[in-house]
Amino acid sequence: MGNIIELTDVKKDYLLGDVIVPALRGVTLEIKSGEFVAMAGPSGSGKTTLLNIVGALDTPTSGKVFVEGQDISAMSAAQQSRMRRNKIGFIFQSYNLIPVLTALENTEYVLMLQGRPKKERREIAHNILKEVGLEGRENSLPSQLSGGQQQRVAIARAMAPEPALILADEPTANVDSKTAASLLDLMAELHQEKKATFLFSTHDTSVMKRSERLLWLKDGQIEYDGKPDNFQLP
Image 1 (tube, rainbow, N blue to C red):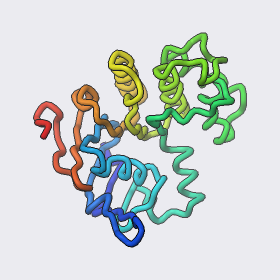
Image 2: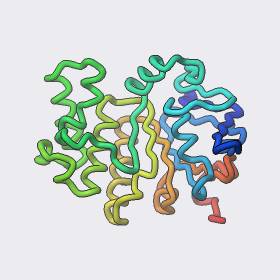
Image 3: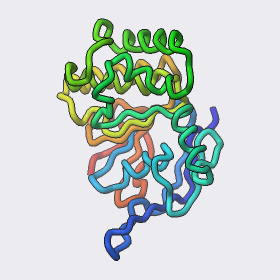
C-alpha cells in the first residue's frame, strides 16, 4: 500500500509579538493508505498544528507536505480548498456543525459543495446517518442532540463523501467515557468498512490503545512511533 501522507522536515513557527515560537521542529512522517493512527502528547506538543498542516488548513514555515502524492504546500488556496472538499474529511472537537441545519442537511453539506444532485446526496446522507445510529433523528437540529449525537453527525458528515483521509482533532474530548467508547467503535467500524485512513489527535489513553499505530509528540517533534502496546506514558 502506498503512502497517503508524507511529511519531510516540516517546521512551523508562530510569531507571538516579537518572539518566534516553534510549534513543529522538523517532522518527517509517512502514513500508509488505510492506517488507523493516533497522535498524542502534552498540550502544546504540536498535534493540532500537524493535523491542520496535513489538512491544508495551515501552511508549514518550511518542509514538504504530500497528500495522495500531491504537494499541498505548493498549491494555491483554491487548489487546497478543492483538496479539502474532495479528499479529506474533518472531525473537530467542537463538532463544527451548522446550527441552523438539520442532521441530514449537515451531513450532506460537503456533498452539496461538491455539486452532487439532491436525490443522490439525500440518499447518501440518510444511509450514513443510519450507519452511525441516528436513524429517526435526521430532522433534528444540533441544539436538539446530545454531545455524542452531534459528534456522530460530524463523523457522518466527514464520511459521507467517502474521502481517502479522515482527520480528527480530539474527537472524544467533549463526551463522557461511555459515549467516547461508542464513538471509537464507530470510527473503527467505518475504518474497516470504508478503508479510509484515520489520523486523530487525542489526550485519551483509551483512544491511544485502540489505534493501530501511535505517534507521541513532544516539543514539536515525534518522540515515539510504533505500536501503542509498547509505549509507556511518560
